[in-house]
Amino acid sequence: MPAATDTPKTASLDSATPARWLTPGRICLYAATLLVLECVVVAAWWYGHSVIANPSVPRLGWDFVVYWCASGLAQMHGAVAAYDWELLRVAKTPLLPNTFGPFAYPPTFLLMIYPLAALPFSMALVLFALTGIALYLGYLRAVVGNLHRYWIVPALAFPGVWTTLISGQNSLYTLAAAGGALWLMRRHPVAAGACIALLCVKPQLGVLFPLMLLCERRWTAMAAAAGCSALFVGLTVMAFGVDIYPAFLHSLAMFRETVAVNIDTLRGAPTVFGVLYVAGASIPLANGVHAAVALCAIATCVWVWCTKPRLALSASALVVGTLLTQPYLIYYDLAWLAIPVALLCVDMIRFGSRGWERLLLIVTWFAPMQGLSPFFIDHVPQLAPLVLVCLLGLIVLRHQAARSAAQS
Image (cartoon, rainbow, N blue to C red; front, top):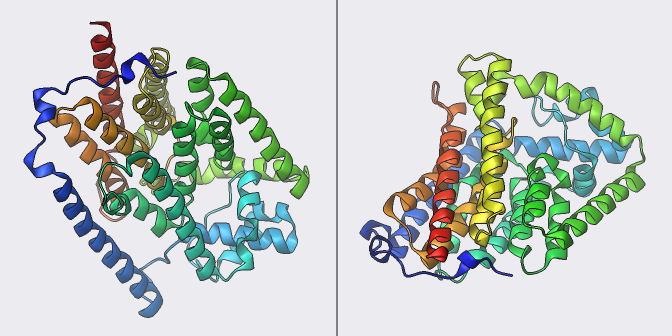
């Protein structure tokens, strides 16, 4: 059943006269320009590392190196070997001689990437990236494909895509799973539950889904998510054995004690905890402030979900709330912002918008680029937490306006 606030209202004067600088044609032009620049930067990056062999230029897809090596260790020595830090360090050295990152992903993700090492590294990286892009574009086409025939230009230019690609991360996959679940929630709840179950590959990103399903009373989707998650975990145990989970938990504990509080790593963490810790706050203080912000974000999301929101606002609240509550989040996870940006674009076209709302959406679109910048520019803080708080406020205001209009 659609929410009462789903009925389109007459757009306000402000929304009926869009900013002249923000026409669809200009959006495509600006996005195309940025897309060309992004391609040039990545090409120069590849040239600097692979052709010139500049030691100061890191290999593209450095996180994918972890996936590929974990896959190789699992194939050669058994799945438990993927969580052996010393074996992984030796396997990674030919590809990343100066850096080390452990494999701290759950066995469900190892099951998904197990075949990767059957291909050469470069071929596997390209295939992994192209598949992620295809899934990402498939989701966006379902959401915004009818808005403009050149929707694919800003979709490809979205900085979150490029921060994910250069690091070789799995954010486009988790984005597609979460976005698919939210898009299918009110149409095909069983399929939505299956998409939620796919987030078992990175379960911390699915932490708010059960709460959302409970608040909106989506029992079919909840049952499907629970059943598919149990099946996913069961398949992992059948494939790798029960010993895989103790090995994973041991690796995860080591990761939390070392990497998760590493000051250099947290420079790329767009979280309240990361910002405060990098600025010099103690771990208890940073954790306390982060917990307070996270609880406020969760309470806000619960209020939205319990008051019959429009699909775009409900889904956007989940994504923003998820990103705000994570104590450990890295810049590439901001690729998830493609979901609220796309949904809110559609919502603003249907129900109207104000100038500051459109401006905030543009700032949100650029947030992944800013999230990466502290790695390359000293003394640049992470601004994403502030953007996320403002975006959640925008969602609340639009939902409250819709409720007031429905009651009048």
